[in-house]
Image (cartoon, rainbow, N blue to C red; front, side):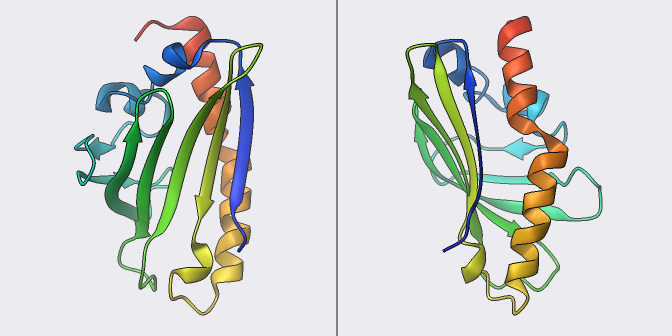
Length: 143
């Protein structure tokens, strides 16, 4: 099943990177300033996308300190029937932490044109450069 995946090695230990995933305030600094999230398994979240024309909502599916944050992901008011997932995973490396961001489950959203959605998310991943923003914050700002 196609997924939109980006990875970046950050020269900091998983504990330093995790601080930027561990609180709503930290997440707002690099994901989206209007993110509202109850950061616990089962908690709900909502955000207005970067272009400002789509609301996205879902639930926290998994929260493993220094390991992963997994969210369901549903574009509201459109033709999505089922949510996809947004996954942030951290893996220690010799130089720091490999951070992977993935959108998966797009084939199961119940939308006939889901291959176009995958292509749109590919373009968005390159345009928004979330992992690069995260790396910059980890390197220059204290949480």
